[in-house]
Image: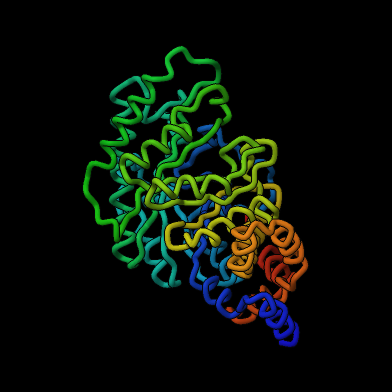
Length: 414
């Protein structure tokens, strides 16, 4: 296409080959979260969310069962270019209408998801579900003061690791299995140590069983605060950073899990000095961890710039984590996924070697000048070429497919 040819010339003048960037973009999967499609409800019949989670809005047409959710994902995936993974929570098990407690979940309860992933050339990631359950109603799970409650959640975590390993073995790609718990106090605690000691011991039990890292990658996810845990979160950033370093685990950094003024991108170079791998949960917090749909904004771009500048694409797993019930849920998947991929493409098109040379030589004037010039280079033409090559709609045209699906499918759901 003429626009892409002109874009190649513009980037080539700076020593950047868009073809190389497109090849790297095509080879880098984004793990798309299932819970955007049904407002994190899952299939256990939960009447409301727990664990400080909140999906706002009541846009019609949310998925009510696994078949609907998979159908909605298929529609979204058809509009998102490149490679894909799908990220599941344990609460999306299919149990045939039988009550199966979470500590008894097995791979058979996810056979429908596994078969679907195989049929569509997808890989799977996984999460234990430590919320929206009677034994999480007090706000504590793995750090609960009662041993029998901790035991239930420990066994749930162990079961989910095994499921993740079976996903990885069956699909030939390691399943990132991520542990996040909502544990914490709404108001000021007296004893901050004891819950963390209990969490440390519980995590060690969960991870005690040796599983092949070629099949499952264990991740732990910190959080600054949550609804109902505003004053104290057991699994803080400092706790899980120490745990990931000493236990050689994957550390998850969620873009919404820090102070609004913190620069998440700045954390990557520090953390990757000490941990083997990072999991990114790309999200958008507005004033708090509000899980807004990802957009092509400066914080998102900065995260991907740092990944590319550090040469860490082989040490970072990229996933999305948001749930907006105020807009069409399929559109939310598409907008957020395409925005994350655009941010990655922008980073891949940066003349990093030249910028680094300016910096080493102390030419900060040229560094800043070039960074500003990059903002108006024809990134959009390269992105459109990527969409064309992967047979998805270019530009705004994808919204027509979403509108048609809403008329033909979503509008028929009560």
